[in-house]
Image (cartoon, one colour):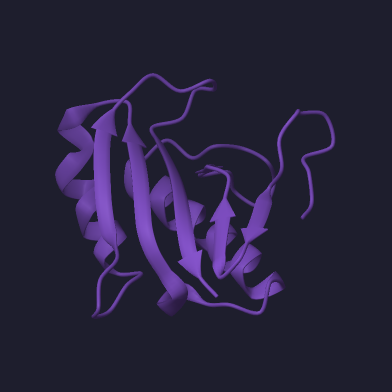
Length: 114
């Protein structure tokens, strides 16, 4: 379990055979947030994949995703980018419109089976 340096939450929590990941935003490697929802979605999954790999897991272990979009008009572009990161069996998913704490268009959190 590792924590963000200045925020009061864990990046991951391992409970039994389940790994819970905190939400990921679409930051680029330079710390900026790109404008488009597709690039932000791909960046979210790059970060999620890296976290899973640090725990000895991969995208195939993801069983559930909760996705937050700031604009419902971004749904088609988001969905297209999202689909590129999974193969069958697909995880269950909930997608909602929500305000985010920073100027981003998408945040994704996942639960993985160990």
